[in-house]
Image: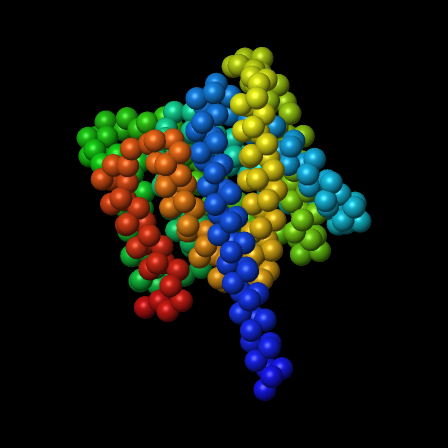
Length: 308
């Protein structure tokens, strides 16, 4: 009885520690939206921010997981056909589009648009894999799309007639669509590559792909300012968001279980929105609350275990 009780207590502690790590991971990632918006105000170009983010993260990944990555080099090289396109979608595509969106829209607006992610992944499964969805999931899709649309048009129906979307909101929609593709493709991650060597490999490939894009932006748009503010922002997105966020998420998922971890991802728009209001002084509007409520209701209907 004592051993059984001890095992139960250990399992409970492991779950709780896993939940804490998952919350921290989402909080770290939410801060990325705040830094991305603040970086726009500091005249930091989006591609430059993404390049230096992953160059910084790469140094940290190699420091801690370089040996493990080297030991799995044969598996990594054998799976480049997956790794390169996946990296182009995730490390390069999503992050660049998200930072580009934050150049001309608020962190609150962009983060709430991102909340439609789980439903987009569900729709990708339906379209690509023909995975059937239930009536309840279908209503979840409707609610989530309605909520996201309400946020995108900023509560103004006239936007639909004129099709004059805010440029940043359009980029945010593109970013979340790419993020959904990334989440969908993750199911084909090579099992023979450990998660941290996998992340290290993505950082390497990402820096290689981003380098010419960053050079182009520097020559044709504007260079990255070299000052204390830009260094501070880059350190946050490179170390806190990329490395610590990823590590906390992976360890939290291991402790709490993948099924439970999935629900914690829905905290992202909430955390990011609150941080945007507190740290950036952004003003919440009625359509933010109404749209977020509809998206959350849709996610609950789409992801609940018992679907009618």
